[in-house]
Length: 346
Ligand code: MRU
Image (cartoon, rainbow, N blue to C red; front, top):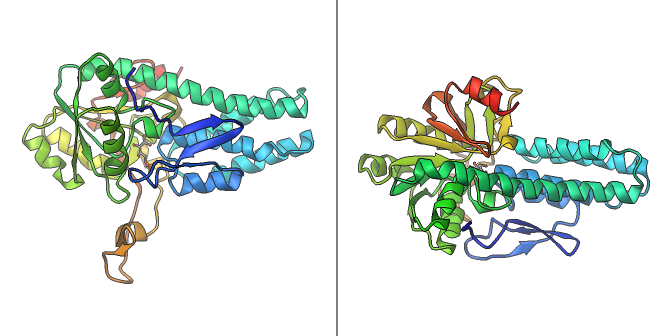
């Protein structure tokens, strides 16, 4: 399938390579975290971001933590410590916690292995997680494509594309899938204040492969819908509760209400690693709040008065009632979500 040639995370000659997403689109530069602390910081600073990518990066982070272990006892100690530490990098995307648990479980399931084999096991689990994410995104593309096939343009928010996953993205996967079949859907990308993932990342990655993309500010979404310039909204997710409530980038909730008002379908695309059946509703999803400088400054330039109070939640929760369908790797989930999600996760 069609997708940008650049994957955000690569295992290269014994090193984890991340595309530093804070530098895009001006510079395509790789960084090579060598320690678990450096991986924690790359996640926290959004050098690697997007729910599935955060999970994959954390899995590699565990390998960085255990590869120097000197005994099996030390290995398990480092593994637990690093998992607890990486879990503090960002709170909302459940993929992070899911990936950490999965790698820990893989290492604990084989206590008879030698120290070298245990280290190898952690690395191979991280690589497997990455490959599975790629396959899940491909399947999301395949299942989502029929929903978008007859449309000419869709609106998306933040970046739920290749850069947010192993490859192909979630919300953008159906767009890439259709492009692979020769149908170029026009994408309107919200710039996504305050960190501009739409402008810096979505616009960039779509442009790379020649998919038509129009950049708008977040406040222009209503008029784009009113003027019928798009026929659907499609976004990714950071965590989906058992009832279908969806946490995603701040501004998603507003878009869902706008889509509802304009009679447009509102689609969420996400793999199983983004579902958190332990939470009954979105009210329980922890929402990351980030520093005030993301709002008081534009780049390095101050754009708000000194000392101003700031509220900067990085995510919001869209109630399930606004969501037309959730596109997963196994198919399209429809309301009532409590039922469809529980069947899907079985
Ligand atoms: O703060 P970010 O850039 O990590 O936020 C990312 C999003 O909100 C994405 O929409 C979400 O993680 C889905 S990515 C496939």
